[in-house]
Structure formats: C-alpha cells, structure tokens
Length: 109
Image (cartoon, rainbow, N blue to C red):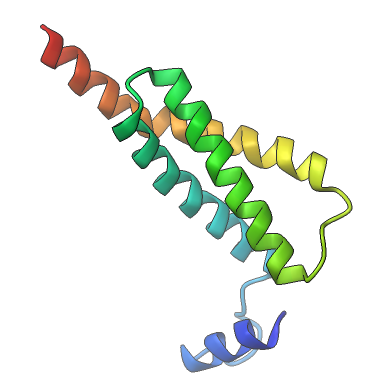
C-alpha cells in the first residue's frame, strides 16, 4: 500500500487490518470513472451504444493514465488491462445509459 493511502486510512480511523487493498481501490476508481464518463457521454451523444463505447474508451484511458501515475511506469500488461477494464466500463455505460434511452424515447412520442 502506498504511503498516501496508508495515511488516508489512518486518518479515517483504520487500525491495521481493515486497509483496502490496491486492487479494491483500483476497482473503485475504475467504476467511478466509468459512471462519470458514461453519464457525460450519454448527455452528449444521442446514440445509445455509441455513447456507451465513447464513455468506456474515455474511462479506460483515464484509468490507465491514473494507474501509470500511481505505479510510476507503464504496466507491462496494459493491453490485457485495457481490454478487461474496457469491457467493464462498456457494461457500466450500457446500464447507466438505460434511463437516458428511456427519456429520449418518451420525448419522441
């Protein structure tokens, strides 16, 4: 765990074993980026699948940049991580886009 994460956990009252792992923190960051990117892309792009794909691409690139900044170097498995994170971000984009799709269909009727 990085010193900054350890400091934040200690400031929140963690005493030792309840620290989150780096994998859990990474997953939280990826899901958060995916939700925000999906909302923005569905607001800007009217086509449902295209908006989900754009949001997934943006979230994935931002996540890889954050991971590179955290590690200090480019992950050697970046292509695998890009595909897996992109699939998760695309799935989140499809779910987040459902209310936008329903609102647009109702507005057309």
